[in-house]
Amino acid sequence: MSQFQREERYIVVKLKRIDSDTQDDLREFLVSYQIPTEQCVVVEHDWPIHEETWENVERLAKGHKSIREERDQLLGLTELLDEHPDGYDGPCLCRSCREYGGAS
Ligand SMILES: [Zn+2]
Image 1: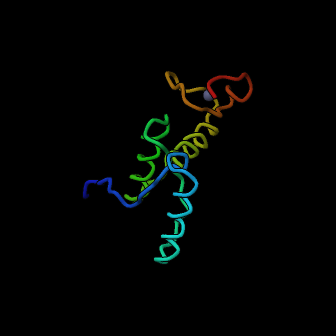
Image 2 (image 1 turned 30 degrees about the horizontal axis):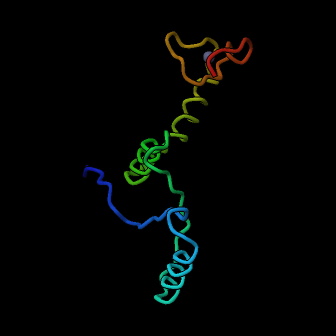
Image 3 (image 1 turned 180 degrees about the vertical axis):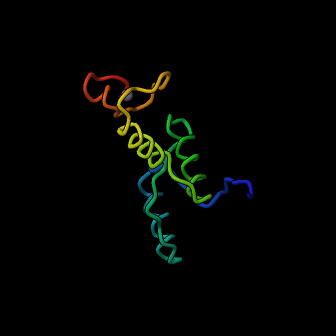
């Protein structure tokens, strides 16, 4: 399987870094060249979920499940258990945890 490569696909500018006149000029430029903007989520490099977001992008690019889908699948499996698995400290819906509380 080929290695996932992060690539530069967008130019993102934080609006607070440019004054309102420059914002207007930039918007006019984009409109005049008929360059559409994109609907995106931007996660700055210093946010705690930055690397997790990249991991999700990589998973999706490779056709794998997202972190959330994998967690939900695992949570669904724990729901089938009567006893809490030894040493497991992740989210759990086993009978013991449902009845007495536990790792959540
Ligand atoms: Zn449990």
